[in-house]
Length: 70
Image (tube, rainbow, N blue to C red; front, side, top):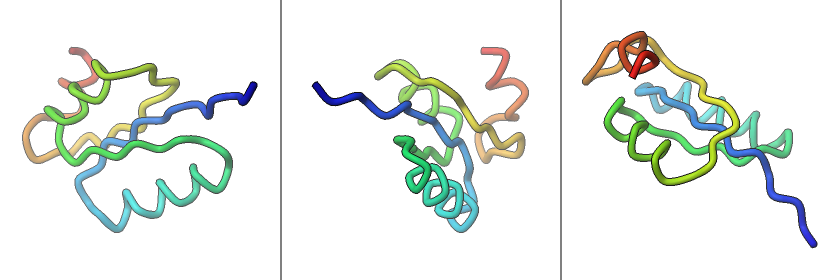
């Protein structure tokens, strides 16, 4: 039986920042999933079990604080 890696959702619209976070998380044994918009983040959250969300507050389609509340 293999253990599943904790899934971490990274919501960041800057590709360079998202790639750096994704690399660090994958290196430490997590399963990072990156989204660049609030809408994509809501879809990703609905699709599966997420252990943690790293959320940028300045997204192109919604304020990160508003997304957090929803």
